[in-house]
Every structure is written in C-alpha cells, then in structure tokens.
Length: 97
Image (cartoon, rainbow, N blue to C red; front, side, top):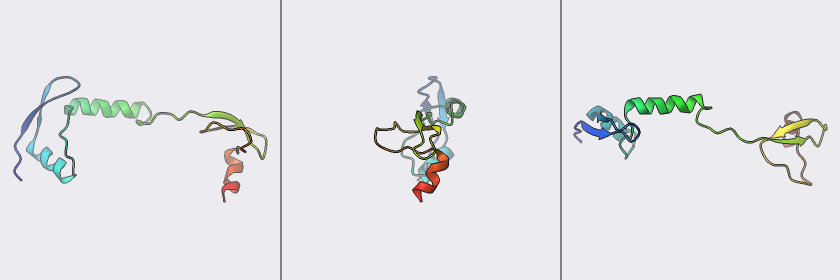
C-alpha cells in the first residue's frame, strides 16, 4: 500500500501536525488501526506526565491489619474481612506454599 503524508489536528493543543507516510507505514506494520490524535509534542508531554505520576499506574489503597501468625501490624492491598486470617509478608510466604 502506498502512503501519503497527512495533516492532522491535535486533540490537546489544536495545532496541525504531519502524520508522515513512514509513520503511517509503521502504524500499519504494528496493526494500529487508528491514527494519532495528538501531535508529537503533546504525546511526549503526556508520556512524561504519566511517568512523573508513578508510571501511569494509580497507587493501590492499603489497609491496616494484624498478622494472624505473628501479631505484627502490617498493611495489605485488600480490605480485611472478619473471620479471615491476614498475614504479613514474612508469614505469608511459607503459608502460600
């Protein structure tokens, strides 16, 4: 397939940018069906912002708990339920094997 440079409009800053024929060919080789919605500068800024904020992943909420084996205070990534044992990281490893 033959590709021709396209002029697109950035959804973030509103500036026009060129989606080159070689970029289109690259997108097609990767199986991408959508064309970019942001200019290269806004894409780079968004990528940098994501890495500055923890890599794009939101921090998981942690809950206080008391280990059922050793009695040590710990934090777990789930809300403990009554009647269900919770283990600190030191005690959990032998239990799960």
